[in-house]
Image 1 (cartoon, helix red, strand yellow):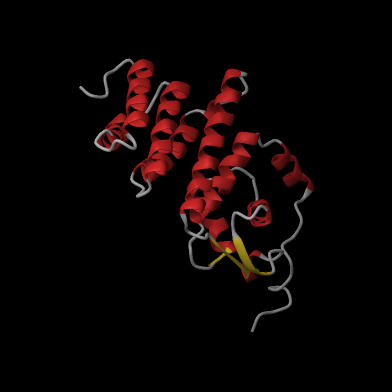
Image 2: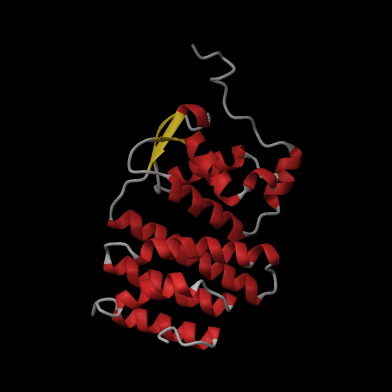
Length: 213
């Protein structure tokens, strides 16, 4: 049987935690939201589970950003209509959310990905990006690009190819041995050929190497 303590709402952020959270950049918050969405499923999943997976994936346990903040972001994603919820979202252990898998929901994740790349690019040009907004961010976005380059929907694959080109341009670095073969397969489809070729051109231009060699 659950105790009254177990059923208590999640605690509010402490003063120290509020300071840490307020220091997060717009790009960092966008990352957290996208990671949370990536761990949602078409079936119901406990909010506490999604929060734990997101924190493990990004190594948040050591950053001082608490799980309660992640749970608050989940509630915000529900309020935005990006996730569906059941139970009391003020208690992450006794609430669940699900990701309604459809073309529209996949496009929503790609929109978040594109938005994230745009924000990081803006911060980079403004010299606001720190070392933490370099390799770790690139690797995270690359993982999404690899996933969606293999998506069955041609629009999703095309946007992913464009995102790969953006990464090459922003960071001057890309895991080409993994991403380029996936982009090459898009050249065979007239619906994705143009975006794929543009991405390969960006990789060649900004990385100084031919992705077709």
